[in-house]
Image (cartoon, rainbow, N blue to C red):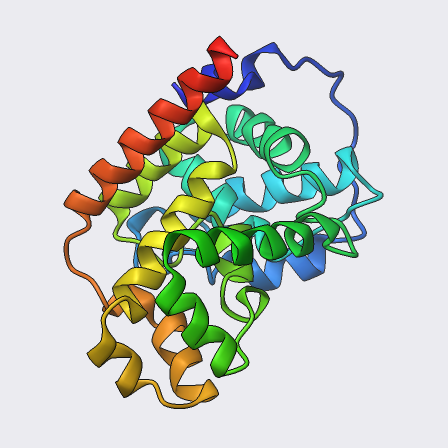
Length: 237
């Protein structure tokens, strides 16, 4: 479904020899992606081999961007759900259409969206936003990895798949809404904010967000409702 939703199936390019300059760098990362998943446990397994080929192919396809470490877990999740060729084109669509500038050398896309996220947090969870300001914590300090990796390192896998369903349908706004949910989980209550009475404590809580929740079903339904409403509003508008 994802290749169809994001338009990867419509992308056709002639195959070319893979760009070799990034191979050694990429190889150092392939065995770090989901090491406990059976698909990626062995260096000789098809999972790591396909991941290497997909990431190498992207560096050849976009030599101006090269390889960004955050693309590793994204490509790994794609490979869990589709063949390598489709995973490559989905990665290309994510990098170019959904998150332009996220994986470029200057990371201008994610820098811009981190600033946007600050405004979203101020509007939707003002108490947590005020706490972040008081502690000198900017979204760029904790949400960069969330956004660039599409939460692949931060959500339970079943929740992650549903979030990606919404992302491919509605785009980056889904990532902002998930960030709101996670910040509320970590800092939404007064007692939680009191436990994080410094910059380091606040950052540790946010960076360890995967351990802060066991069930996101209710929050996920809220995200789903929000995104569908926004999606249809944009379509009608």
